[in-house]
Amino acid sequence: MKKVIALSAVLTMGALGMACGEAPANNTANKPANAATTANTAANTMANAANTMANAANAVSTAANTAANAASTAANTAANAVKAPAAANTANTAANANVKK
Image: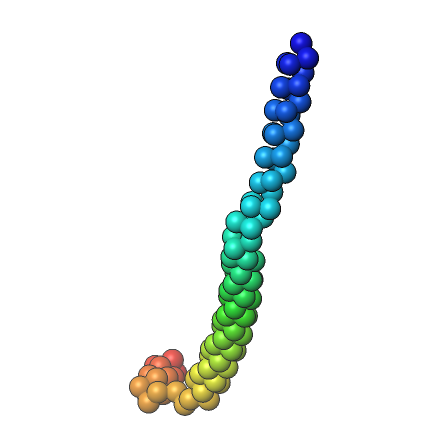
């Protein structure tokens, strides 16, 4: 029985030693992966910021185009209101006036 207890103790200590001994190796192996993850996170953050700025620029451009279109429509409406009636319409109006009398 003492041999079993001693063997169990040795195996337990060996298992603990292996478990504790692997941690630095894992940390060393994970350092490049962690650095790559950090770099990817930074790159993604910058890409998201660039996309946000591009979206804002597009919104400004759309607003400017909308304003330009509104101004053009207003100018066309004003120009159409100022135009003299066509000669044919004037002649028709005169002819109709004569018929009514």
